[in-house]
Image (cartoon, rainbow, N blue to C red):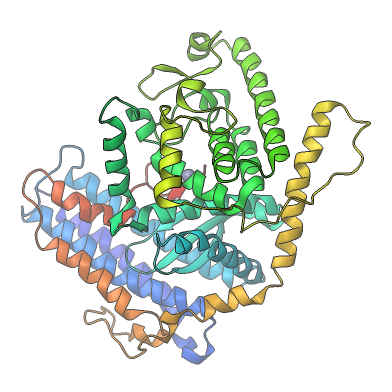
Amino acid sequence: MLKTKEVWSARREGLITYLRDFKRFYDPLGVDEMDTWQEIVWALMNCLDVFLQKQANFFIEGFANGQLESHPNFSPESTLNIIIDQIGFDIEIMEKIARQRGTKFNKFLTEVDCLVWKALDLAIAHKLLEQKPIILTYFQKSTSIRVIPYAPIILVGIPYSCIHNERDLLAIPHEVGHYVYRLGKHNNQSLFAWAASMIETANNASEVIPSWAENWIEEIFADVYGALTAGLVMALDFQDLQKRRTLEQFYKDDGEHPTPLLRPFIYQNTLLAVDPNNETQWMEKLNQDWLAHLSLRKSDLEDLDEEWAIGLRGESDKFETYERKLKTVTEAITTGGEIKESQKPIDYIVKSILNDLLPAKTYGNWAPNFKDETTNDLESLPDHEILHQELEALYLAFVKWYESEKEDRACTDNIATLKWREADTQLKLNDNPVGHNIGHTGLPMDEVRNRLETLSNNKTIPAKGKGEGWLLVLDAGGWTVKGPDCEATGGVCAG
Ligand SMILES: [Zn+2]
């Protein structure tokens, strides 16, 4: 039972008041004068307004009148805290989008929308998604993707650094992979259901996929998706990303991401599995670069006097699972080269993704073709420096490709003329709380109405027992999986 109903109701009212005041900023603009992004933000705010009330009321009233039972891990107070946090996070994103799109950076962000659009091609080609969502990118401290249950819109945060450092845009295909994993379907089943039966098959005879590897499936999918989308330069970028981890992060499992020392092999093996002969030279260079980095880490490990590091000394080809067990790299994955047998857990997962979900014949449609890339005369440099310069050529080619793609207006036109913009503009949401005709924006009201109805229908029959039923409502298709800023409270985070 919730004894503090009034306090939580006041918190809800605070959010509603703020959101509606923020919405008024757009009100006088009128339909004809709105840019596309303004129409989208306007509709998004209206959808959040409806959702906010439904979601908050369901839980506040439900806990207060005893209709919802407490869950051992999610007390009424902690559940309501999650909702208030997530709604605040979404309002913050909308404010960021509105502020940033009203500046000269709108052009840059629209070009990035286009990159996200293209990164969704692979999912459409393999029928994991039926259609592409609307895309809104915005700047924030780091890359993340936000799955929202109340509108068919994908919100993609990109780091401010992208403005001058285009290679930071390479996190996009991996993030799009998360979106596909969460909302995609395979044979009319969610990818979560696919993963569950894949694990069951794998573990039927012997335990091929232990729990530490099971925890990494979504991230492995996003890695495979990223590799197939952007190819070699993506493999290089993720390799470099792992070099940024601290030594402790490098060797210890966080219970969600493949441990950094293993991760580049996922990219290398995926690309080789799709095309064992092509680009071999580049693959060897990537492998060589990573093995050199592993030996640097190894000597750091010998030097560090912290307890966990001492435990791993002399075992630098091992990592520590979240259950604090030591496993060797080669037990988990093939380290460079074609996957020959699938008794290694990560190999098995990668192979299953490639066989069932993404049976790609080629990779790298999102990035340039690197076959012709050559580097300048490097013979006077030491070996490791030559390798570094050669790999840099991949980034340089990516930036060149990105610059030339920017001129491709066809993609941004596509975004602006999505079919749902033609939806019935007269539709109204019956319970539109502020009396606005949110349909006037031309957004897909059918779609929005369906989503809200699904949510409210679910809510009429909370399951008995300790919250197992309403946990699904709380999760709202992944909305509350993580908190804002990827910490206690939002979004699927980069990495
Ligand atoms: Zn990720």
